[in-house]
Length: 145
Image (cartoon, rainbow, N blue to C red; front, side, top):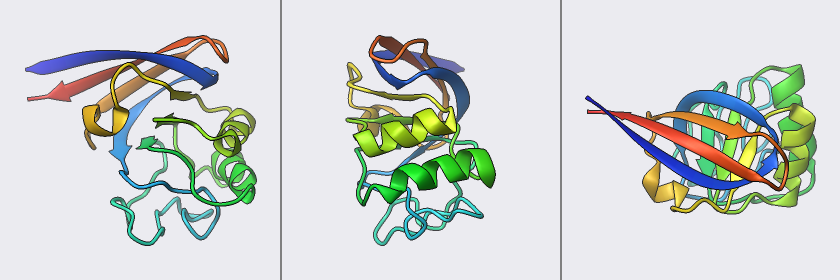
């Protein structure tokens, strides 16, 4: 039996994406010392998802931690090494990550009507539909069981 939950929020980078959710309760940055450029592995100290691969996942986290190099690093992972996430869901997407998501051509959403950190579970199937920056976006969560 599947359960569907639909959340609404704001698109910060437009696009559509679908994939398995990967929920990290701590802030994280996209610079190479937090997430590997060539393998997409989470390396941030104390991260829930340390040792896991973000490639092709819908990455859910509170907001960024780190410097402006995270924008370039997120772009690099998405467009050059192809080890980036399929989409981002945050409580609040920081401008650093917005820049990286736009350049990397992946959707990023925030300001959801429920807290994504507690509502979405790692392993859920998540679909993001973010048609226009600054406009309404929907996040559809499909949970088995």
